[in-house]
Amino acid sequence: MTPIRSENTAALLVSCPDRRGIVAALAEFLNKQDGNILDADQHSDTDSGQFFQRIFFEMPGLKDRRKKFELAIDELAQSFEMVWKLSVSSDLKRVAILVSKYDHCLFDLMLRHRAGELNGDIALIASNHPDLRPVAEQFNFPFFHLPIDDNDKNSQEEKMLALLQQHQVDVVVLARYMQILSPAVIDRYQHRVINIHHSFLPAFSGGRPYHQAHDRGVKLIGATAHYATSELDGGPIIAQDVVQCSHRDSVEDLTRKGRDVERAALAQALRYHLDDRILVYRNRALVLG
Image 1 (tube, one colour):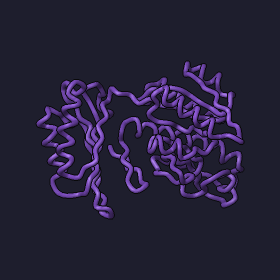
Image 2 (spheres, helix red, strand yellow):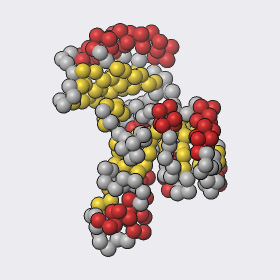
Image 3 (tube, one colour):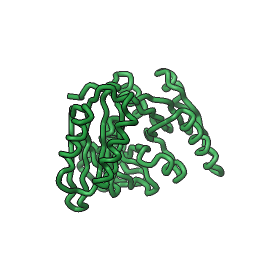
Image 4 (cartoon, one colour):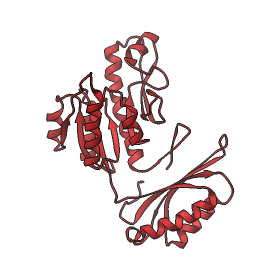
């Protein structure tokens, strides 16, 4: 069951070198702050010796007491060499969806948003093509056409960055946006750009993965939602999904089946991000809670 979210609930994400007493110290700290833990999940990585935890809690007057609370948690964090992040539930993240011409992932996210399944706001939809403007306007979302000049792609990305900043975007979703983002965008939104790749990575990265899968006669095809990095299709994997197939399936069949898992994996990854369930360490995305 999803805990009730309000201005008095928040998620606390922490990571630090593993040692005894971390869980007890955090629980005691929250208790002294009049906090009540609603949900908690943790992981100790034996290979790296790192500890990770997500605590979802409620605390009366959290919004007004936030600065004081953050100073207190920072003091505790220093004693454990802890990296931490606090996200108050009422501070909804603003989402920008980038798309090209394929509309299935875009439609899915807009429908889920309308149904209240996404704990965030869609701030804008942008595309390098004008084709999906009527789709965005059908759902009353602002649409921006950012055409690309092959001889000057940087100017398009500069306009994109200005647009994202103007609309105070927190997370960027590449909903089959068929362009490779430059380091200028990736670095500005590190671990905040979610891409959907139509393959079960690390298999069949790059272009035409369904054709590659068909050529290999695979029995499963999948989709992978991951944070975009400077390495093509090599970022931390957030969510994956698969569907069965056979030698009887044509490339068109694989593409049709694949679109279903693309939608599911991308939506799941975005939910995890919006709910502050992800900690990234050594190019791995740990999903907690």
